[in-house]
Length: 205
Length: 196
Image (cartoon, rainbow over all chains, first blue to last red; front, side):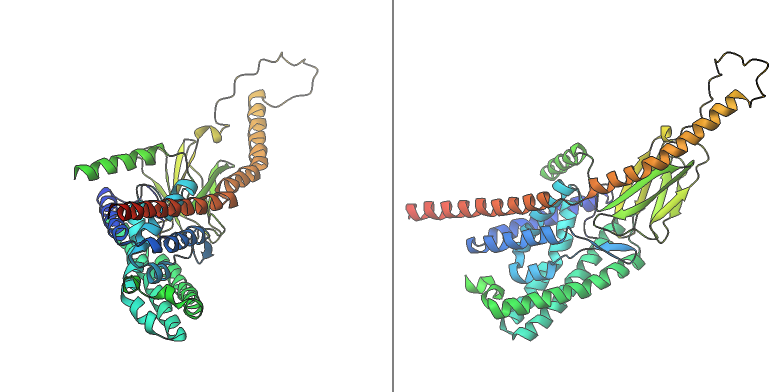
């Protein structure tokens, strides 16, 4: 899954991932509004807790990523949110690794941020049910994006641990469906209860 | 570039100084009647099916490759007792490893000649002392391994368990970070307000 441990990826991939993640975090922190901090922290904590729990699926095991949902609500602030949660998971539980922290952050945060950028304006305008469908599709795409990035990181490292397409499809396809459902329910709920959460922040600021 | 290198070195140091840590995928390996056996499991439940197992005895030696079965199990009879390094990889970025020490195989050292006084000629004929001692040692090894295995398995599972306190601690740290950020932001606003 998206927590690639130490000693699997090659040096250039680790450095590239670290630089890209640092860039994303720096950009996001510069744009981070004071009022967004609690929201970012809450979703970071949610990701931290939820992605610890893995469920066996087929030959491997999967856990929720919430990338799409976080991207829709946080926008670019998904980068620091994911980074902090992954750092704590790595230090406290040994999930993922410290050297691969940058790559893992980038792999989860970038698809989420892109989905947020593309779909958040449409979801802010749409009705609750339409927003749920859009969010579901967006989340599934974010999961697919993360899966692709993980496979690419492994392939670029060209060692014994290259991803097997069969395992990737068997694990990420069910996850896409589940993530889509979870995000759809969350967005339709938020849309009814507190629609301003989904309003694009730059417009409100 | 120099900054990147420095950060890279720091991260590498951190990674190497970190204590033996749990991974999402874990490998349980033990010695079962002379065979290297065990299973690959995921923290939180589930076994790694069809995962590739690579066994090496020494760096550079030709590795042995196996696949786990439907229950994540593997078993391999090594040609000779040695310290074996076992790595499991599921093919989607999950990797875990374990080392089985040579001493775990046991029973292969030549048994020292018996120093017991010679048996009296009237006693019934007895099997060769050395062979007997070796047989007893093998049986004891097997029995101890059988009794110890559940304990080792339970220890592996307990070590990998997610603890509620740790999860709450992590969430608490995130909340604390948010608090620090908010405090910094409010200070900055107050300062800029005072200067304007």
